[in-house]
Length: 142
Image (spheres, rainbow, N blue to C red):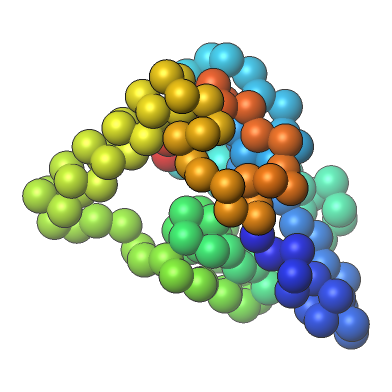
């Protein structure tokens, strides 16, 4: 989803993107316990380590923004700036959290039942090679 912005962002700085487990071109193990917030934050830190980046401007959209915020909270020395787009800090209100989790579980069931048809035909769906079973694991875990 960031692809249209990459040329402008990379004009005067190094840009590294990553796909969360279950999304895009990731390896998608079919083990539910591997799809957690902590695992995703660890993956993000591992990408920074692999690229030999000590401190970065970190950002994300929606769940990616939430996970970028989680990286900042757990490893503040790695984050020099934070860009959050269409995201929030999570749900403090139990009822709101319950509604979100019910929605996410419904999406997971739809992905298992209907495959990629469950998420429509948006450009990011058409361009990526998503595995619907892995997306379902991600919806349940994240």
